Amino acid sequence: MNFTEEQIERYSRHILLQDIGVEGQEKINNGKVLVIGAGGLGAPILLYLAAAGVGTLGIIDGDVVDLSNLQRQVIHFTPDIGKPKVESAKEKIKQINPDVKVVTHHEFFTADNALELIKDYDFIVDGTDNFPVKFLINDACVLGGKAFSHGGILRFDGQTLTHTPNTACYRCSFHSPPPPNAVPTCSQAGVLGAIAGMLGTIQAAEVLKFLTGTGELLTNRLLTFNAKTMNFRTVKINKNGKCPVCGNHPEITELVEAQQAVCELKKKS
View 1 (cartoon, rainbow, N blue to C red):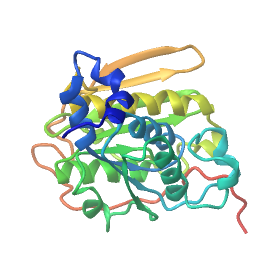
View 2: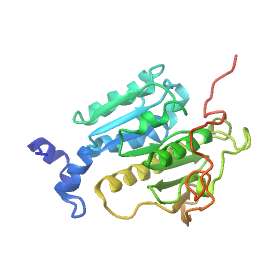
View 3: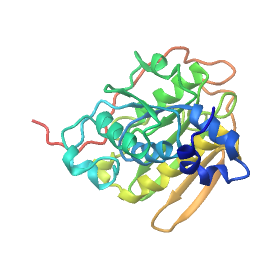
């Protein structure tokens, strides 16, 4: 692609990097990334990917902006309360970088639509807040042959790993979702808002590394951190031959989904 003078200036700090340069920026501009969830993790992920110039950003989220979201979901502002999150996020992305094509899906990620939603993207990012959807994203990406970044936060803790075809997937270490109510949601246990930004920016960096072929991805590794102590730890994960979705004799050959409460803070009628 031929960069305009404005684009050269916009992306100059990437172009100056020896490991990225013009060729790497072209790869970013041609990249197609789907972010599932426009909440705590999705907000910083989308902001940084838009600023970096990812050519096409897909956003899927069936929720609307709630007052309790604003403590950590930095892509949404107070006037956005009640607005679909995908539309609120799209408005901010276009303000940051009008070059980015934004594709919105105001719906939830389900077993029925998952494979169709991911098929046109190079990389999938898990920015969701409940275990069943995280496992569904994992299974859809494994079955669809897609690379993805897993991320999760609770209280002061965060964790992330990256999967590419033929590397360890989420189920290689975490076989199945915990039973309902076994693990609290952030509405029950709370979450420090800033750790959403800490983890989301790590996930965004993984996307850019994948698109440009730069550095070492968090494949076959689980990165965890605790913001109270600022201790970061990387744990090696081996591809599990007995994994139910990517193992030698997979049991999961079609998508199914479990039920679990999501991270909401709303009174039930």
